[in-house]
Length: 167
Image (tube, rainbow, N blue to C red; front, side, top):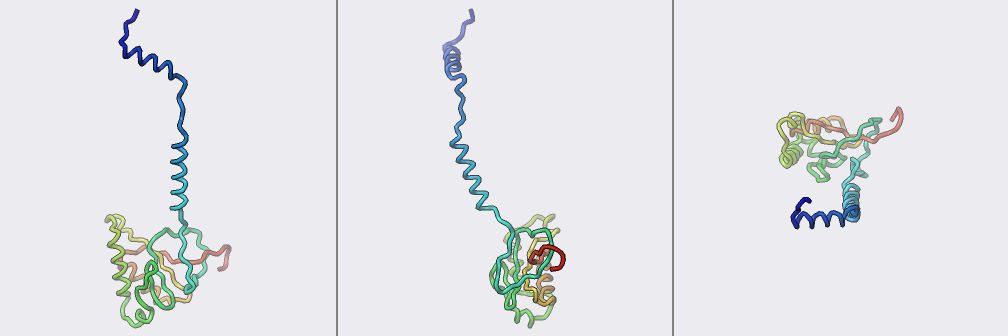
């Protein structure tokens, strides 16, 4: 007969007694899934430019949606970055040169707040320009030139998506 220790005998008894009683506590699992669902619902967002009565976007049949990034809004009175007024349109029209100094300063500040690696910096930062459909091309050109000088060279123009052929 094989001699076993008291500890081994006690372990055998416990294993025999608890055999087949494995259970799964679903309460904790359901709590985790509930929290996960609420987290995903709250943080889920589609990219949508804020509606403004001051801006009427041009129409387009473009299919792809822009990513969430910095927004420069050009309306009839002023230029805004992330909803904050930077410079008025009369000041921009009165200034000389290819760039808008106040906008350049603000964009450089925004770029400093989120540094990029040299590889990503070479590709350029992403920015969305929202302009009224009646905004003069010369003004949009100045805004886009200023954006590219501040390392925001991946520029998207916001438009209204229309279905079909002619907008």
